[in-house]
Each structure stands twice: as C-alpha cells, then as structure tokens.
Image (cartoon, rainbow, N blue to C red; front, side, top):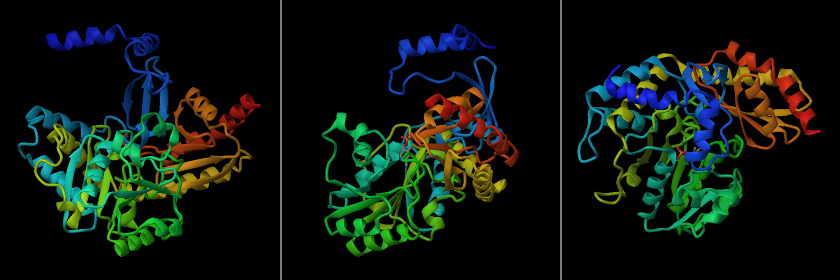
Length: 410
Ligand SMILES: *Cc1c(COP(=O)(O)O)cnc(C)c1O
C-alpha cells in the first residue's frame, strides 16, 4: 500500500460501522434522498454486501444501471486499463475510445447518419436534446403526464410530477403535457409550432407504464406530418434493459433524437444524446459543451458493457428472463398481486393495496433490494446477468413479504 492509499484507508476505517456512516451522512450530505436504508460496502455479480456483512440479491441494479451486475471483470479491466493509460483530456481533443463508443451508439439507432453528444448522466443527455429542439426555430415541446426526464431546470420542465416541479417554477416554458399512450390527445396538440415530442417508450419512474401497441409508430407519423422532432428518452429502457438496445428501434421506428444513460456505463457515469439526420446538425461549435462528457474512461466503460451484452447474448437472456419472471409471479396467484407489466428485465408487480413501501422494507430485511416507484407498484430491474434460480429465490419469499406488509398496514 502506498502512503496515499493508507491515508485514504485511515479516512474510511473510521467509517467501519453502518451506524458511523449513517451518522456522518446525516451531518455532511444534503437531505435530498431521505435517510439511506442501508450502507453497502461491496458488490459482486448480482449480490451486494452491507457494512454488517449481510448479503442481498440486487433486483434494482442501482436503478436500472448495473446491467452487468457489480464488479464485472470486463468493465473493471477496461476502466482500470484506460485510467492507467489516459484518464481525461477535455473536449478540445479526441480519443479513440470516445469515437468508438459514438460509432457503436450511432449504429444502434438503425440510422446511418446519427451523431453523438456525450454527457455524464441522463438528465444532461436530455438537456442537450432540449437545446437541440430550440435550434429548430420552434419552441413548444410536447411531453406526457407521468413523464420523468430528470431534475435539472430544463429536464424538470419536461417532467410531469407537480411535486418535483412546483418549488422550482418558473421553468423553461412552452411545454404541453398530454395523457401518455393517448394518440388522439397527442395528435390534437402537435401542430407546426411544435419543436418536438418527447416520449419514454415505457414510463419507468411512473411505475413501468407501457403505451398501447402502435403508439410510438403513430407518434412518429404525427411528428412527420407537422415537421416536429420525435425525441425518445431511453435513459431507463435502453442498453438491453428491455431485451433490445433501444425499445423504439425494436419497434421499427427511427427517432430524431434519442437519449441514453443509466445502463450504458454499468455504474460509471456516462450518457449520450444521439441525434439523427438534420437534428444531428443543429448544434454547432460553441452552442453546447461538457468538461467530462465522453471522457475516455467513461467511453471504455460503455464499450465494455456493449461488448459483454453482445458476447453473452444478454438481450435474448433479458427477454427470456422477463417472460420467466412474469409467469413465476402470476403463478404465485397471491391475493395482493393484481398483475405484472413490463418488458425484458424492467418489470413491475402491481399490488392490490398501497403497501409497496412496506414490501420494499420487508424485502430488504429478507436480503433483497427492490423499489417502489408508486405506492402500489414494486419495480424489479435486476442485472441482465441474473439467473432464473436467483430470481426464483425472490419469488419464493415474495408471498410472505406481501403478507407481512399487509399485516403491518392493517
Ligand atoms: C433516470 C432517468 C432520467 C435521469 O437520468 P439521471 O442519470 O438520473 O440524470 C431521465 N429520463 C429517464 C426516463 C430516466 O429514467
């Protein structure tokens, strides 16, 4: 161990217990997320370990991020190899890694004229997309009820939840919200003043809400008729999560703008705004920027993730396990489960009662990480490398978790 490493380890050793970390957290970290439920110290494949040495099956993947689970050897080798070679150079310069990732992401869109702007998060990818829409000369954007596009002022302007928005108004304006999945409502507001329609192919934060079949294709037609850009926010759904690189491409649609992030770096912060055709030429020198965006370490993380998903057939695996999950949950035939919805390994269990938060706590106590995007919805977004046996270990305890949560609520 070098002198620098031992200084760092001394700093961390004072934080050896969960209680010490949580106390330091409440003293020194802003209270934007509420009190943390656990302190995690290690991860490997689909498992996490807390500060007390307890093991958890990770069925959330850091919010649809760790598509390859934790400490994946290929990502680890790519990131450590790159940071030992060249960690960062600024966007005055190009790196092979950045260009290679841009080419991979471009090809995922199904178009041959896509271009990339790299970011560090999904919010920033959407921020770049928002700026592209302003360059059309039109300013109205159509978003949807229940939509989540991030928390920066621009992304928040497109996010529907009044609880997130109200304290920060005025937000960038001329955003119209229409009911998600309602094609007539969309058609009624898109005219020649509309710059763009922004849609999640599946609303993740709203509780894994799927639009009716053909909705995205109809949205494409409406945008074409009125000269508006179709912007697909695939930050949560993309990168294999739903069994395809991009859900809308899987449905045969070409967008004008696509945003991705979460799964792209397997936990290394990286996002991208992908623009296609004329939309890819709207931002010019000086119109946008990012110090870190597309740095070579982030870029190799993305390249490693894509390579492993391809090598290990994880798109098909995600689809197969999504089907397995749906069947297994419905087979439980539990009185508190009214349905399962989702695609690939982005799935929601719909509950008959608003007890999801209590189920999440009961699951943690039993060694499973899940989350509750709505009071009556459990979200499951496990690593794409998960096995059916690992999933089954959760289904075998789920009935007792539901019963326990319902009992507490009554
Ligand atoms: C998570 C999410 C975002 C925001 O991404 P961050 O990386 O948290 O900034 C944007 N859009 C969708 C659909 C998301 O799920």
